[in-house]
Structures are given as structure tokens and as C-alpha cells.
Length: 126
View 1 (tube, one colour):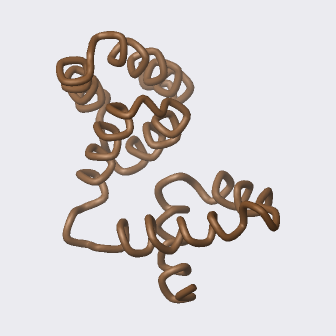
View 2 (cartoon, helix red, strand yellow; view 1 turned 60 degrees about the horizontal axis):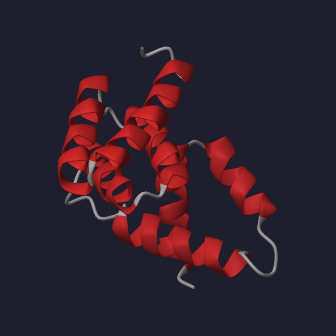
């Protein structure tokens, strides 16, 4: 593994998802999951998020749309928090969910609204 890419990814991952969350995940990694955690940190966060061509707010908005389309709600919740950290507004989150609803179906939009409400209420944004 490229240590430089891992370190870059670790910094990006912590700045979006929060150091406590990331450190908890890395600490919980064992011999079975550690290689994936390291590869994902280097590849997704170092290579992907480390490319400054797309700003973090736009990247967070893209992630919400894609992860919402896939219906991966645990990841959507994590990235919803990260999107707020990266400057995505409540109104923008709502608009993203509208697009998910149109292209992926109303039931998926309902799920995204349910999870978004939980995150936004936790952060006293609604």
C-alpha cells in the first residue's frame, strides 16, 4: 500500500466524517477487515477525495445522490453527516433527495428523508 496515499486519505476521511468515527473504525479493524480499511482509505479517500478537481461540497452532494440511488442507507447516513460538515445545506439535501426520488423511486426518497431527518435533528438543523 502507498503510505502517502493512505495518509492523505486518512486526513480527508477524518475531515469529512470526523476523527472519532474514523479512529473507531480503524481501531475495530482486525486481521480480516484491516486490509480493506487501509485500501479503502488510500483509494477512496486518498485517490478519490484527494483529487482537488472537485471541491468537497460537490463531492459530498454527488456521494449522497449515488449512495442514495444504491439504497445503502447506513453509508448514506454517514455521508449525510459528512455533507453537512462539507457545507451542504438542508435545502440542498432536500433537493438531492428529490432527485433520488425521481430517478430511483419514491420509496427510496422516503428512506433518504427518514435518515436525513434523523441526522438533521441530531445536529439541531431542523
